[in-house]
Length: 409
Image 1 (cartoon, rainbow, N blue to C red):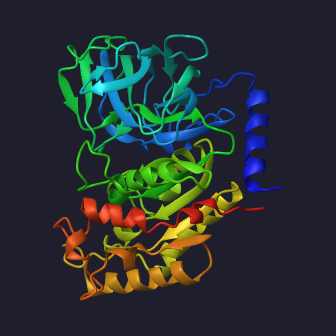
Image 2 (image 1 turned 30 degrees about the vertical axis):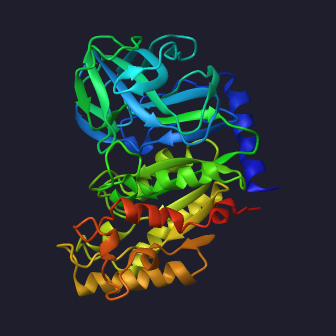
């Protein structure tokens, strides 16, 4: 039995056993052990942003969150998260519509979301919930506006800090409104929303890009969807071949494989941010530079052991793993020859160990032919670590789409 068939059967069994799409969960004190509901059968993730601890939450406030779909489908659901909260979060109203411009929505597109039939929902500390499915179809590559009225909120908010996309906020409940008048505050972060799913065409699946600030899109142009996973999503959409069509971005700026710091480590957040997302076929593993440049004594052996755990856990879930080599960063303030030696050894392991199902050699794509320890100047945004828009596109263009289709028995 193939991994894809096994996952579909598992999702169906879980959904039938639960009777409803989203069961209630006991409160959880730790985000690393947050209760993640089983994904609805047939759902495929069309957008995601990994959750982290934000600043102090504010109640009586509406967030209009602008996100871009990847794969299209019917039965849109949103997944909201209180993973890092230390008290209940009450969402008094939730709507989803199509953005026309700014905070203004396309007339007639804004529709009420419900949770087990209710217009409001209370999330315990650590809890994550799916909405009920909306009727109708949502197109791929759409600008979706999800409006969440946080009626009661306090303590640490849950969200994604570096959106590189403008969202909006308003005082009071304005979730149902399609005009932008009340949305006077512009936001550079997403709050409480961590995934959007659709019931995609039969056989369609998704890839999750697990990474750090390069995957999160730092130094790509704001509000233009020019992160490398965005370029990849457009390639998948335009391709007539293959079944992987959804792209979920699980990048967090500063993230490390082994250690907490800028968010929980990749090892700790893997279940919540990657494996729990519905319809995932492939994990695209592209992390490690922050471990290497942290000067914390990380060796190639310790970093590749972390990779192996991510790979083994992903394989156990029936998923394929594509591994990308660590890109050069000479010129960045934390670069040194010792770290460079670790990077070279780690990249050799990625290329030759056979631990991953496919390799994408980002190192070779973006490095200078005159100094292999540096980014090619054409791709360098200027800090010698993060690629610019051209570099992001070159990375995405180097991914063999068929590598995302690997099957596991």
